[in-house]
Image (tube, rainbow, N blue to C red; front, side, top):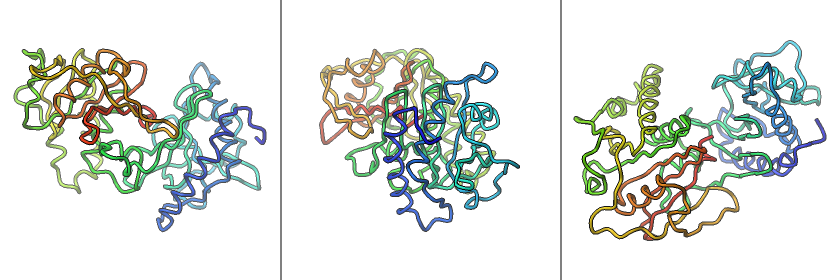
Amino acid sequence: MSDSRYPAARAVAPKVRQHFLRHLARHGASHRVSHVPPAADIEAMVDAAFWASLRREEGYVPRLSIALVDPATIAQPMYFAQALPPAPTALAKMAPAVERPGIHLGVWRVDDEMRVWGTLHDVPDTAPVIEVASPGLLVVKHHRRDGSKFVNVAVLEGDQVKIIVENASAIPECPEMLSSLRGADGTPSLPHINILIDLAVSMRAHGRGGTLLVVPSTGTWMKSILRPIPYAVHPPFNALADLMRRPAEERLAREWQEETEDIVAALAGLTAVDGATIINDRFELLAFGAKLTRGDGYPTVEEATVTEPIDGSDAAVVHPSRLGGTRHLSATQFVHDQPGSLALVASQDGRFTVFSWSTRERRVHARRVEALLL
């Protein structure tokens, strides 16, 4: 395990360790704290996870999650009678045991050797987690206190390494859902922000591409919709809105979470239909399959700002055609004409873009966020 054969592992390990040291310094008073492993251990596990991702076990592609955590710092770990070496072959064989969400292989130094010591469910906030998402695609992430989606720290795809930008709260006019995805300040996400994130993840998962518009409850947004709408919903479908109005203590119950997951999946599924799915800011479904159009009197959009929350990535002002296909063009025009709206666009190739109006720049800002959704 001492010689990394995957160059990206060596490049990313020191940056990942620095992230977790800063994270530990911010949240050192938490009861959910683990030690940060040295860069060499992070490098070794990224290397092993990468090569495991390229293997096949009984014809299946390994999907697994590895937590670099000292078992002495967590509650109710499941120990193996004999700790195992974290070699790619062994990881691929153990992958089916930790394929389901919420289960992780625990790795730490045992007698000064890196070993898979068992499995765990309860991951400390400051423990690096390496997830094998698909062959050659790894995500380094950490748990968040409110139990919502893990915060991504780095994405490695082949020879490409993307380090997620921190300090999202310092980025002007950054939509709340993106600040939450970046885990900027470590505070719990608001329920309505988590729902938007869940919708985005579910939209991306169905793989057909789609557009979700979040529009004001009142306003002129209908001027930018081609009528008649083939699949208008009347009265608005308010099952998700009703769930969001439940008292905070009810939202902690498993029944509420399961019901919310089902409705989110159903709404996200509507985005696979050609056209846009439209909900208002109260999470009421208004329509799906809607065709977007440039409203009367509105100029054609000629430029937009595009950014990606990746270290070293600079903002660029481009023609909307550079952002993607028809969905991206129509979403840019819609948000330009209806600046109080938000447009979430999933591409079939996995790209995901959030469009919002920038008052400061006086143009639409397109944010590429697929690295945050993995």
